[in-house]
Length: 263
Length: 226
Image (cartoon, rainbow over all chains, first blue to last red; front, top):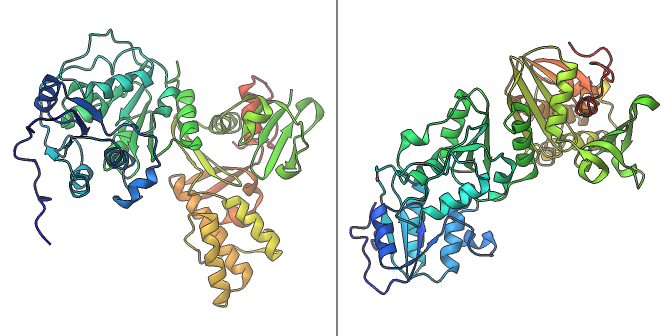
Protein backbone atom coordinates (compact mmCIF):
# COMPACT_ATOMS: atom_id res chain seq x y z
CA UNK A 1 0.00 0.00 0.00
CA UNK A 2 1.34 3.42 -0.90
CA UNK A 3 2.25 5.87 1.84
CA UNK A 4 -0.57 8.30 2.45
CA UNK A 5 0.85 10.56 5.11
CA UNK A 6 -1.18 8.91 7.86
CA UNK A 7 1.92 8.92 10.04
CA UNK A 8 2.19 12.70 10.16
CA UNK A 9 1.21 14.15 13.52
CA UNK A 10 0.96 17.70 12.25
CA UNK A 11 0.80 19.01 8.70
CA UNK A 12 4.15 20.82 8.14
CA UNK A 13 2.60 24.03 6.81
CA UNK A 14 -0.95 24.77 7.90
CA UNK A 15 -1.30 27.88 5.72
CA UNK A 16 -3.39 27.05 2.70
CA UNK A 17 -3.34 29.18 -0.44
CA UNK A 18 -6.48 30.95 -1.63
CA UNK A 19 -9.20 30.49 -2.63
CA UNK A 20 -10.41 29.52 0.82
CA UNK A 21 -14.00 30.46 1.61
CA UNK A 22 -15.45 27.78 3.86
CA UNK A 23 -13.46 25.56 6.17
CA UNK A 24 -14.40 23.07 8.83
CA UNK A 25 -12.60 22.67 12.13
CA UNK A 26 -12.48 19.63 14.40
CA UNK A 27 -11.39 20.30 17.94
CA UNK A 28 -9.64 23.60 18.56
CA UNK A 29 -6.90 24.44 16.08
CA UNK A 30 -4.19 26.81 17.36
CA UNK A 31 -5.07 30.45 17.81
CA UNK A 32 -2.70 31.38 14.98
CA UNK A 33 -4.80 29.29 12.58
CA UNK A 34 -8.08 30.78 13.75
CA UNK A 35 -6.65 34.29 13.59
CA UNK A 36 -5.40 33.71 10.06
CA UNK A 37 -8.80 32.42 8.97
CA UNK A 38 -10.55 35.34 10.68
CA UNK A 39 -8.20 37.82 9.00
CA UNK A 40 -8.88 36.29 5.61
CA UNK A 41 -12.63 36.40 6.17
CA UNK A 42 -12.96 32.64 5.87
CA UNK A 43 -16.25 31.12 7.04
CA UNK A 44 -15.56 28.61 9.81
CA UNK A 45 -17.81 25.63 10.59
CA UNK A 46 -17.30 23.77 13.86
CA UNK A 47 -17.68 20.18 12.68
CA UNK A 48 -17.94 18.87 16.27
CA UNK A 49 -21.39 20.48 16.48
CA UNK A 50 -24.71 19.34 15.05
CA UNK A 51 -24.72 21.15 11.70
CA UNK A 52 -26.62 18.93 9.27
CA UNK A 53 -29.95 17.15 9.54
CA UNK A 54 -28.72 13.77 8.42
CA UNK A 55 -28.79 10.30 9.90
CA UNK A 56 -25.67 9.57 11.93
CA UNK A 57 -25.77 6.07 10.47
CA UNK A 58 -24.26 7.57 7.30
CA UNK A 59 -20.98 7.78 9.18
CA UNK A 60 -20.87 4.01 9.61
CA UNK A 61 -19.37 3.66 6.16
CA UNK A 62 -16.29 5.46 7.47
CA UNK A 63 -16.19 4.89 11.25
CA UNK A 64 -17.27 2.06 13.54
CA UNK A 65 -20.70 2.51 15.07
CA UNK A 66 -19.17 2.08 18.52
CA UNK A 67 -17.09 5.25 18.39
CA UNK A 68 -17.21 8.73 19.88
CA UNK A 69 -20.49 10.29 18.71
CA UNK A 70 -18.83 13.70 18.37
CA UNK A 71 -16.25 12.37 15.94
CA UNK A 72 -18.94 10.47 14.07
CA UNK A 73 -20.82 13.77 13.84
CA UNK A 74 -17.69 15.54 12.60
CA UNK A 75 -17.32 12.99 9.82
CA UNK A 76 -21.00 13.32 8.90
CA UNK A 77 -20.68 17.11 8.76
CA UNK A 78 -17.54 16.84 6.65
CA UNK A 79 -19.29 14.54 4.20
CA UNK A 80 -22.35 16.75 3.85
CA UNK A 81 -20.96 20.29 3.88
CA UNK A 82 -19.24 21.78 0.88
CA UNK A 83 -15.92 22.80 2.37
CA UNK A 84 -12.66 23.98 0.90
CA UNK A 85 -10.53 22.48 3.65
CA UNK A 86 -10.63 20.98 7.13
CA UNK A 87 -8.41 21.83 10.06
CA UNK A 88 -8.39 19.05 12.58
CA UNK A 89 -6.51 19.29 15.85
CA UNK A 90 -4.84 16.00 16.70
CA UNK A 91 -2.69 17.06 19.61
CA UNK A 92 -3.10 16.59 23.36
CA UNK A 93 -5.82 19.24 23.27
CA UNK A 94 -8.10 16.89 21.37
CA UNK A 95 -7.73 13.11 21.32
CA UNK A 96 -6.22 10.12 19.60
CA UNK A 97 -9.60 9.48 18.04
CA UNK A 98 -9.25 12.72 16.09
CA UNK A 99 -5.81 11.64 14.91
CA UNK A 100 -7.33 8.51 13.41
CA UNK A 101 -10.31 10.41 12.03
CA UNK A 102 -7.93 12.82 10.29
CA UNK A 103 -6.65 9.89 8.27
CA UNK A 104 -10.20 8.81 7.44
CA UNK A 105 -11.14 12.30 6.28
CA UNK A 106 -7.97 12.66 4.23
CA UNK A 107 -8.68 9.35 2.54
CA UNK A 108 -12.34 10.14 1.93
CA UNK A 109 -12.52 13.78 0.94
CA UNK A 110 -10.99 15.55 -2.09
CA UNK A 111 -10.02 18.60 -0.02
CA UNK A 112 -6.97 19.39 2.13
CA UNK A 113 -7.17 17.98 5.64
CA UNK A 114 -4.71 19.92 7.76
CA UNK A 115 -3.59 18.37 11.04
CA UNK A 116 -2.66 20.77 13.79
CA UNK A 117 -1.30 20.37 17.30
CA UNK A 118 -2.61 23.09 19.57
CA UNK A 119 -0.27 23.71 22.47
CA UNK A 120 -1.35 27.30 23.14
CA UNK A 121 -0.77 28.34 26.72
CA UNK A 122 -1.92 31.97 26.82
CA UNK A 123 -5.04 31.99 29.03
CA UNK A 124 -8.03 33.98 27.80
CA UNK A 125 -10.02 33.55 31.03
CA UNK A 126 -13.26 31.72 31.68
CA UNK A 127 -15.98 34.31 32.33
CA UNK A 128 -18.70 32.29 30.60
CA UNK A 129 -17.92 29.19 32.68
CA UNK A 130 -18.49 31.15 35.86
CA UNK A 131 -21.39 33.31 34.69
CA UNK A 132 -25.04 33.21 35.71
CA UNK A 133 -26.39 32.35 32.29
CA UNK A 134 -28.49 29.32 31.40
CA UNK A 135 -26.07 26.44 31.05
CA UNK A 136 -27.24 25.76 27.52
CA UNK A 137 -26.43 29.34 26.51
CA UNK A 138 -23.03 29.13 28.18
CA UNK A 139 -22.17 26.10 26.09
CA UNK A 140 -23.51 27.64 22.90
CA UNK A 141 -21.37 30.73 23.43
CA UNK A 142 -18.28 28.77 24.42
CA UNK A 143 -18.51 26.49 21.40
CA UNK A 144 -19.19 29.44 19.10
CA UNK A 145 -16.12 31.09 20.61
CA UNK A 146 -13.73 28.53 19.12
CA UNK A 147 -14.26 30.20 15.74
CA UNK A 148 -13.03 33.55 17.01
CA UNK A 149 -9.49 34.58 17.87
CA UNK A 150 -10.55 37.36 20.20
CA UNK A 151 -11.85 36.94 23.74
CA UNK A 152 -15.52 37.46 24.49
CA UNK A 153 -16.92 40.37 26.51
CA UNK A 154 -16.39 40.41 30.27
CA UNK A 155 -19.12 38.93 32.44
CA UNK A 156 -19.75 38.98 36.15
CA UNK A 157 -19.44 35.63 37.87
CA UNK A 158 -21.93 33.99 40.22
CA UNK A 159 -21.62 31.81 43.29
CA UNK A 160 -21.97 28.24 42.02
CA UNK A 161 -24.56 25.78 43.32
CA UNK A 162 -23.68 23.02 40.86
CA UNK A 163 -20.94 22.01 38.50
CA UNK A 164 -20.73 20.49 35.04
CA UNK A 165 -17.39 18.93 34.28
CA UNK A 166 -16.47 17.62 30.86
CA UNK A 167 -16.68 18.18 27.15
CA UNK A 168 -19.62 19.82 25.41
CA UNK A 169 -22.05 16.94 24.96
CA UNK A 170 -23.17 16.04 21.47
CA UNK A 171 -26.75 16.40 22.68
CA UNK A 172 -27.12 19.73 24.45
CA UNK A 173 -30.60 18.91 25.78
CA UNK A 174 -29.15 17.59 29.03
CA UNK A 175 -27.85 21.07 29.82
CA UNK A 176 -31.36 22.44 30.30
CA UNK A 177 -31.68 20.41 33.50
CA UNK A 178 -29.07 22.47 35.34
CA UNK A 179 -29.59 25.72 37.22
CA UNK A 180 -28.14 28.97 35.85
CA UNK A 181 -25.72 28.96 38.78
CA UNK A 182 -23.86 25.96 37.36
CA UNK A 183 -20.17 26.52 36.83
CA UNK A 184 -18.44 24.76 33.96
CA UNK A 185 -15.25 22.75 34.41
CA UNK A 186 -13.15 20.29 32.48
CA UNK A 187 -12.28 20.52 28.81
CA UNK A 188 -15.09 22.99 28.14
CA UNK A 189 -13.35 25.40 30.49
CA UNK A 190 -10.14 24.80 28.54
CA UNK A 191 -12.06 25.65 25.36
CA UNK A 192 -13.13 29.04 26.66
CA UNK A 193 -9.64 29.66 27.99
CA UNK A 194 -8.26 28.76 24.55
CA UNK A 195 -5.79 26.33 26.13
CA UNK A 196 -7.29 22.97 25.14
CA UNK A 197 -4.18 21.01 26.10
CA UNK A 198 -4.03 22.38 29.64
CA UNK A 199 -4.42 19.11 31.54
CA UNK A 200 -4.18 20.87 34.88
CA UNK A 201 -7.10 23.14 34.10
CA UNK A 202 -9.03 20.21 32.71
CA UNK A 203 -8.65 18.26 35.95
CA UNK A 204 -9.77 21.18 38.10
CA UNK A 205 -13.16 20.96 39.79
CA UNK A 206 -14.87 22.41 42.83
CA UNK A 207 -15.46 19.97 45.72
CA UNK A 208 -17.86 22.44 47.34
CA UNK A 209 -20.62 22.00 44.74
CA UNK A 210 -22.39 18.87 43.50
CA UNK A 211 -20.88 18.12 40.13
CA UNK A 212 -21.84 16.00 37.15
CA UNK A 213 -18.75 14.52 35.53
CA UNK A 214 -19.70 14.03 31.92
CA UNK A 215 -17.96 12.32 29.05
CA UNK A 216 -19.12 11.03 25.71
CA UNK A 217 -19.46 7.27 25.64
CA UNK A 218 -16.37 5.56 24.14
CA UNK A 219 -14.23 8.63 24.85
CA UNK A 220 -10.93 8.23 26.69
CA UNK A 221 -11.99 11.05 28.99
CA UNK A 222 -14.46 8.68 30.67
CA UNK A 223 -11.45 7.46 32.69
CA UNK A 224 -10.65 10.96 33.98
CA UNK A 225 -14.34 11.58 34.66
CA UNK A 226 -14.52 8.47 36.82
CA UNK A 227 -11.28 9.26 38.60
CA UNK A 228 -12.36 12.79 39.50
CA UNK A 229 -15.89 11.71 40.41
CA UNK A 230 -14.42 9.12 42.76
CA UNK A 231 -12.51 11.83 44.60
CA UNK A 232 -15.36 14.34 44.66
CA UNK A 233 -17.68 14.24 47.70
CA UNK A 234 -20.86 14.90 45.68
CA UNK A 235 -20.43 13.59 42.17
CA UNK A 236 -22.38 11.90 39.45
CA UNK A 237 -20.37 10.25 36.69
CA UNK A 238 -22.29 10.15 33.44
CA UNK A 239 -21.59 9.11 29.90
CA UNK A 240 -23.98 9.57 27.02
CA UNK A 241 -23.63 8.38 23.45
CA UNK A 242 -25.71 9.91 20.65
CA UNK A 243 -28.82 11.12 22.48
CA UNK A 244 -29.58 11.80 26.13
CA UNK A 245 -31.82 8.93 27.20
CA UNK A 246 -34.55 9.18 29.80
CA UNK A 247 -32.47 7.36 32.42
CA UNK A 248 -29.59 9.82 31.98
CA UNK A 249 -31.97 12.76 32.31
CA UNK A 250 -33.56 11.20 35.39
CA UNK A 251 -30.16 10.62 36.98
CA UNK A 252 -29.18 14.25 36.52
CA UNK A 253 -32.55 15.50 37.78
CA UNK A 254 -32.38 13.27 40.84
CA UNK A 255 -28.76 14.08 41.53
CA UNK A 256 -29.38 17.84 41.48
CA UNK A 257 -32.52 17.50 43.57
CA UNK A 258 -31.03 15.19 46.18
CA UNK A 259 -27.73 17.01 46.57
CA UNK A 260 -29.20 20.49 46.69
CA UNK A 261 -27.67 21.45 43.34
CA UNK A 262 -30.95 22.84 42.04
CA UNK A 263 -30.92 25.82 44.39
CA UNK B 1 -55.03 11.77 47.82
CA UNK B 2 -53.98 8.92 45.54
CA UNK B 3 -50.43 7.84 44.83
CA UNK B 4 -49.46 5.72 41.85
CA UNK B 5 -46.27 3.90 40.93
CA UNK B 6 -46.78 3.05 37.28
CA UNK B 7 -44.32 0.35 36.41
CA UNK B 8 -43.85 -1.46 33.13
CA UNK B 9 -45.51 -4.69 34.26
CA UNK B 10 -47.34 -3.66 37.44
CA UNK B 11 -48.92 -0.52 38.81
CA UNK B 12 -49.09 0.12 42.53
CA UNK B 13 -51.94 2.39 43.59
CA UNK B 14 -52.44 3.71 47.08
CA UNK B 15 -55.16 5.83 48.59
CA UNK B 16 -54.17 5.94 52.28
CA UNK B 17 -57.67 6.77 53.48
CA UNK B 18 -59.09 3.74 51.67
CA UNK B 19 -56.67 1.09 52.88
CA UNK B 20 -53.46 -0.60 51.81
CA UNK B 21 -52.08 -0.25 48.30
CA UNK B 22 -53.19 -2.53 45.54
CA UNK B 23 -51.23 -3.99 42.69
CA UNK B 24 -52.68 -4.00 39.20
CA UNK B 25 -51.09 -5.53 36.13
CA UNK B 26 -50.28 -2.62 33.84
CA UNK B 27 -52.02 -4.32 30.94
CA UNK B 28 -55.20 -4.46 33.07
CA UNK B 29 -55.10 -0.85 34.25
CA UNK B 30 -58.57 0.61 33.66
CA UNK B 31 -58.67 3.49 31.21
CA UNK B 32 -59.06 6.90 32.76
CA UNK B 33 -57.03 6.17 35.88
CA UNK B 34 -55.58 9.38 37.30
CA UNK B 35 -53.66 9.95 40.52
CA UNK B 36 -52.45 13.00 42.40
CA UNK B 37 -48.84 11.95 42.71
CA UNK B 38 -47.22 9.54 40.27
CA UNK B 39 -43.91 7.97 39.42
CA UNK B 40 -42.79 5.34 36.92
CA UNK B 41 -42.70 5.05 33.17
CA UNK B 42 -46.28 6.23 32.75
CA UNK B 43 -46.22 8.67 35.63
CA UNK B 44 -46.23 11.83 33.54
CA UNK B 45 -49.27 10.68 31.62
CA UNK B 46 -51.32 9.51 34.58
CA UNK B 47 -50.38 11.80 37.43
CA UNK B 48 -51.25 15.40 38.24
CA UNK B 49 -47.72 15.61 39.60
CA UNK B 50 -44.91 13.30 38.60
CA UNK B 51 -41.84 12.48 40.65
CA UNK B 52 -38.68 11.14 39.06
CA UNK B 53 -38.28 7.43 39.96
CA UNK B 54 -34.85 7.87 41.47
CA UNK B 55 -36.11 10.68 43.66
CA UNK B 56 -39.12 8.59 44.73
CA UNK B 57 -36.79 5.70 45.53
CA UNK B 58 -34.47 7.95 47.53
CA UNK B 59 -37.29 9.59 49.46
CA UNK B 60 -38.83 6.19 50.17
CA UNK B 61 -35.49 4.92 51.42
CA UNK B 62 -35.11 7.92 53.69
CA UNK B 63 -38.43 7.05 55.31
CA UNK B 64 -37.78 3.35 55.66
CA UNK B 65 -34.10 3.08 56.52
CA UNK B 66 -32.89 4.70 59.71
CA UNK B 67 -29.20 4.60 58.89
CA UNK B 68 -26.87 7.33 57.63
CA UNK B 69 -25.08 5.05 55.16
CA UNK B 70 -26.75 2.42 53.03
CA UNK B 71 -27.32 1.08 49.55
CA UNK B 72 -30.88 0.85 48.24
CA UNK B 73 -31.41 -1.16 45.07
CA UNK B 74 -34.64 -1.31 43.11
CA UNK B 75 -35.05 -4.20 40.71
CA UNK B 76 -37.99 -3.61 38.46
CA UNK B 77 -39.50 -5.34 35.52
CA UNK B 78 -37.57 -3.37 32.96
CA UNK B 79 -34.65 -1.71 34.70
CA UNK B 80 -32.53 -1.59 37.84
CA UNK B 81 -31.59 1.47 39.80
CA UNK B 82 -29.78 2.18 43.01
CA UNK B 83 -29.03 5.02 45.33
CA UNK B 84 -26.23 5.06 47.87
CA UNK B 85 -26.19 7.23 50.94
CA UNK B 86 -23.05 8.03 52.86
CA UNK B 87 -23.23 9.84 56.20
CA UNK B 88 -26.76 11.01 55.50
CA UNK B 89 -26.10 12.39 52.03
CA UNK B 90 -26.44 11.00 48.52
CA UNK B 91 -23.07 9.62 47.45
CA UNK B 92 -23.87 7.73 44.26
CA UNK B 93 -26.73 6.58 42.10
CA UNK B 94 -27.33 4.62 38.96
CA UNK B 95 -30.10 3.69 36.62
CA UNK B 96 -29.59 0.96 34.12
CA UNK B 97 -32.43 0.96 31.65
CA UNK B 98 -30.46 -0.38 28.73
CA UNK B 99 -28.10 -3.20 29.73
CA UNK B 100 -30.36 -4.09 32.66
CA UNK B 101 -33.25 -4.32 30.28
CA UNK B 102 -36.19 -6.61 30.96
CA UNK B 103 -34.59 -8.64 33.72
CA UNK B 104 -37.57 -8.74 36.06
CA UNK B 105 -39.92 -9.16 33.14
CA UNK B 106 -37.92 -12.10 31.85
CA UNK B 107 -37.82 -13.82 35.25
CA UNK B 108 -41.61 -13.71 35.43
CA UNK B 109 -41.96 -14.78 31.82
CA UNK B 110 -39.79 -17.83 32.40
CA UNK B 111 -41.75 -18.90 35.48
CA UNK B 112 -44.96 -18.84 33.49
CA UNK B 113 -43.56 -20.55 30.43
CA UNK B 114 -41.88 -23.36 32.37
CA UNK B 115 -44.52 -23.42 35.14
CA UNK B 116 -41.94 -22.85 37.87
CA UNK B 117 -42.40 -21.78 41.49
CA UNK B 118 -39.36 -19.81 42.59
CA UNK B 119 -40.17 -20.56 46.23
CA UNK B 120 -39.36 -24.20 45.54
CA UNK B 121 -36.09 -23.74 43.68
CA UNK B 122 -32.80 -23.77 45.55
CA UNK B 123 -30.08 -21.23 44.87
CA UNK B 124 -27.73 -22.97 42.43
CA UNK B 125 -23.99 -23.27 42.82
CA UNK B 126 -23.38 -22.25 39.24
CA UNK B 127 -24.47 -19.16 37.44
CA UNK B 128 -24.74 -17.69 33.96
CA UNK B 129 -23.09 -14.44 33.02
CA UNK B 130 -26.17 -12.32 32.40
CA UNK B 131 -26.13 -8.63 31.54
CA UNK B 132 -29.46 -8.48 29.74
CA UNK B 133 -32.64 -10.44 30.30
CA UNK B 134 -33.27 -11.08 26.64
CA UNK B 135 -29.72 -12.03 25.71
CA UNK B 136 -29.39 -14.14 28.86
CA UNK B 137 -32.21 -16.42 27.83
CA UNK B 138 -30.03 -18.09 25.21
CA UNK B 139 -27.90 -19.44 28.07
CA UNK B 140 -30.96 -21.22 29.42
CA UNK B 141 -31.82 -22.79 26.11
CA UNK B 142 -28.21 -23.92 25.55
CA UNK B 143 -28.04 -25.42 29.05
CA UNK B 144 -31.31 -27.30 28.63
CA UNK B 145 -30.13 -28.64 25.29
CA UNK B 146 -27.00 -29.76 27.10
CA UNK B 147 -29.01 -31.77 29.63
CA UNK B 148 -29.35 -29.34 32.53
CA UNK B 149 -32.84 -29.54 34.11
CA UNK B 150 -35.04 -26.57 33.28
CA UNK B 151 -35.40 -25.44 36.90
CA UNK B 152 -31.63 -25.55 37.40
CA UNK B 153 -31.01 -23.61 34.18
CA UNK B 154 -33.53 -20.93 35.07
CA UNK B 155 -32.09 -20.71 38.59
CA UNK B 156 -28.62 -20.07 37.13
CA UNK B 157 -30.14 -17.33 35.00
CA UNK B 158 -31.85 -15.75 38.01
CA UNK B 159 -28.62 -15.93 39.98
CA UNK B 160 -26.78 -14.30 37.08
CA UNK B 161 -29.25 -11.44 37.12
CA UNK B 162 -28.83 -11.00 40.87
CA UNK B 163 -25.04 -10.94 40.51
CA UNK B 164 -25.28 -8.41 37.71
CA UNK B 165 -27.50 -6.18 39.85
CA UNK B 166 -25.12 -6.61 42.79
CA UNK B 167 -22.13 -5.50 40.73
CA UNK B 168 -24.09 -2.64 39.21
CA UNK B 169 -24.83 -1.44 42.73
CA UNK B 170 -21.11 -1.40 43.55
CA UNK B 171 -20.82 -4.78 45.33
CA UNK B 172 -21.86 -3.56 48.80
CA UNK B 173 -21.82 -5.68 51.96
CA UNK B 174 -25.55 -5.12 52.46
CA UNK B 175 -28.35 -4.23 50.09
CA UNK B 176 -31.80 -2.90 50.88
CA UNK B 177 -33.86 -4.37 48.08
CA UNK B 178 -36.94 -2.69 46.63
CA UNK B 179 -39.32 -3.95 43.99
CA UNK B 180 -41.38 -7.00 43.22
CA UNK B 181 -38.30 -9.22 43.01
CA UNK B 182 -37.68 -8.71 46.72
CA UNK B 183 -40.54 -11.23 47.19
CA UNK B 184 -38.68 -13.82 45.11
CA UNK B 185 -36.63 -16.01 47.51
CA UNK B 186 -34.49 -17.46 44.75
CA UNK B 187 -33.53 -13.99 43.55
CA UNK B 188 -32.92 -12.65 47.06
CA UNK B 189 -30.90 -15.72 48.03
CA UNK B 190 -28.72 -15.39 44.95
CA UNK B 191 -27.05 -12.19 46.11
CA UNK B 192 -23.56 -12.76 47.56
CA UNK B 193 -24.25 -10.28 50.34
CA UNK B 194 -26.79 -9.53 53.05
CA UNK B 195 -30.14 -8.51 51.56
CA UNK B 196 -32.91 -6.69 53.39
CA UNK B 197 -36.11 -6.96 51.33
CA UNK B 198 -38.30 -3.87 51.53
CA UNK B 199 -41.11 -4.98 49.24
CA UNK B 200 -42.62 -3.32 46.24
CA UNK B 201 -44.04 -0.16 47.77
CA UNK B 202 -40.88 1.81 48.48
CA UNK B 203 -41.59 4.26 45.66
CA UNK B 204 -45.10 4.85 47.01
CA UNK B 205 -43.48 5.73 50.34
CA UNK B 206 -41.30 8.14 48.42
CA UNK B 207 -44.31 9.74 46.78
CA UNK B 208 -45.96 10.14 50.17
CA UNK B 209 -42.81 11.81 51.43
CA UNK B 210 -42.68 14.10 48.40
CA UNK B 211 -46.30 15.06 49.01
CA UNK B 212 -45.45 15.94 52.59
CA UNK B 213 -47.62 13.20 54.00
CA UNK B 214 -46.66 12.12 57.48
CA UNK B 215 -47.14 8.55 58.49
CA UNK B 216 -43.77 7.38 59.54
CA UNK B 217 -41.45 4.77 58.25
CA UNK B 218 -42.97 1.41 57.55
CA UNK B 219 -46.47 2.64 56.85
CA UNK B 220 -46.46 0.33 53.87
CA UNK B 221 -43.56 -1.95 54.56
CA UNK B 222 -44.31 -3.72 57.80
CA UNK B 223 -42.09 -2.54 60.59
CA UNK B 224 -39.76 -0.58 58.39
CA UNK B 225 -36.30 -1.90 57.73
CA UNK B 226 -33.99 -0.50 60.28
